[in-house]
Amino acid sequence: MAQIGIDKMSFFSPHQYIDMTELANARNEEPGKYLIGIGQTQQAVVPPTQDVVTMAVNAADQILTPAEREEIDTIIFATESGIDNSKSAAVYAQRLLGLSPYARTIEMKQACYAGTYGLMQARDYVALHPGAKVLVMASDIARYGLHTPGEVTQGAGAVAMLVTENPRILTINRDNQFMSRDVMDFWRPVYAEEALVDGKYSAEVYREFFRDLWARYKEKTGLAIDDFKAFAFHLPFTKMGLKALRDILPEADEAKQALLLTEFEASRVYNKRIGNLYTGSVYLSLYSLLENSTTLTAGDRLGIFSYGSGAEGEFYSVELQPNFRDGLVTGQMDQLFDSREYMTIPDYEENFMAGLHGATDREFDITKDPAKFVLAGLKDQQRVYLAH
Ligand code: COA
Image (cartoon, rainbow, N blue to C red; front, side):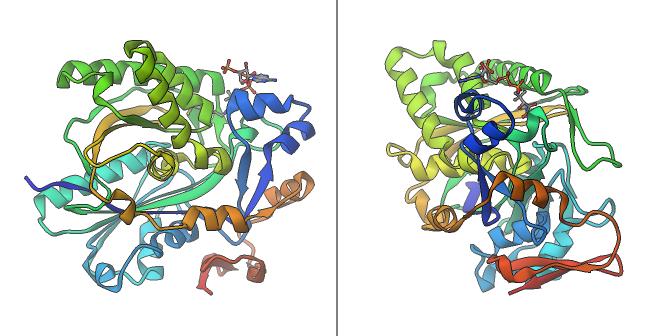
């Protein structure tokens, strides 16, 4: 069977951020708690002119050639902060990106897990349809509310991945282990804009799922920790992945433990500065690992752990391809971090209440948003998207 996986990958996050030391000071917390205990240093802040649709297309637009825009016949949009309870965000993305009309479009939801399901659907579809190309986007705004324990773990952004045969970045091995269980650790009823969360419980269930799936994976495949060069975890906050990794580290000798911890640091460089992006989080961590690790080479096996509250988890492995960095957008992250605008905590609090709440027509000032695709406002209860 053909080798299938991620051919190209791109990321987008809004142009504003806050500093976690300043947020800690404003919330009467020790900065060390946010910076080390939670593992976050900065947090992306979403202006009213960005939503999950614009973030996803801002990411995808940077990797698609004109030919690919014609060839893609399946568009999968994973999100848990969607803009419509009926219409799929993938249809907006199809129009804004100029993709072929002869494409399937669908939105998927299972908390932070849905991007992984989308990726596996894409892989299986390409396996059955040789030559097919699938666009998978995972885009979210993580919003817990001002003065809540979850506030330090907010964030926003989107990852776009093109899934094809003979991919540039990595192939996806057919070794997936997954599980689901009805758990009330995090949910967002249709009437609520902010998630309801039992934060400590969600962190416990995350670890339980990881340990369970890791044991099952080893049993089914006969592989062990030494077969892995590195792991990428879902990182709602970066300490979460460290806790999971530490749960299995005793299985390795001291030298291997040190190597895995070094790779873990590479895998959280970007997440520390963006925050949570729900569905895209584990793939931002993968992106971070691919760009920041100094030791990865072709043929390396990486373990991916995806978790979505509610709850569903999946563990699988991927194999790095020669020249895997060619599938990433060179300089994309440096440019984002170099040009991001610092925001004060009072400005962030004011911004938190701005945006599209309610059904009244309005226009946003799009001149301050440097992104190509923006949300210009609401007219007759329809979101107005522009490219500028
Ligand atoms: N220096 C270093 N570390 C410090 C510290 C300091 N000055 N003060 C506290 N810490 C550590 C704590 O020891 C703790 O570490 P541990 O988890 O390894 O024990 C960590 O900082 C967090 O402190 P805690 O008091 O547990 O934080 P909290 O009660 O505010 O809750 C979350 C933290 C993650 C539960 C909360 O942010 C949340 O609900 N987040 C959203 C839900 C979520 O992301 N769930 C993840 C699974 S999907």
